[in-house]
Amino acid sequence: MDFTQTAGGRFGEAPPFRTARPEASDAEQTLARLELMAHILDTAFVIPGINRRIGLDAVMGLLPVVGDAVSTAISSYIIWEARRLGAPRWLIGRMIANTAIDGVVGVVPLVGDLFDAAFKANRRNVELLRRHLERSGKLKPSVIDVTATRVG
Image 1 (cartoon, one colour):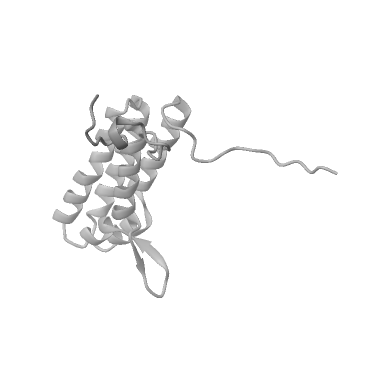
Image 2: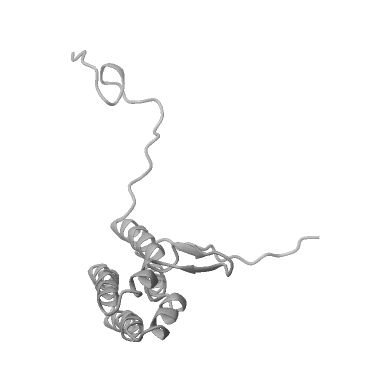
């Protein structure tokens, strides 16, 4: 008989209650990480006075050429993760188009900076990926679709 203290409880007993949450799937963990990344890149800061949200993407876009190149490279990570999760080619193509539009227009001085603040390519791409994963069954829907009926 082993009388050593174990993580499961006293002297090898099982704990009386399970408090651990079941492990999230790889798709859920990846999507949560990508949503945080998209938030930081597209909507992390609020411009005081006009209540418009911008992100690091728009701030980096203020640096001519280099800022937009770095921003586009970081945005391409979302596309890489989508491909790793098994997104179809048409979806990858749409995500590439969103990122390319953001990168190409972002290079134009002043107009590109305003466009970066308005066009949220990363948020769009993560939302496209979320909808695909929900439809394919790899992710539980984030919104429950119900119809209310009046009784009485």
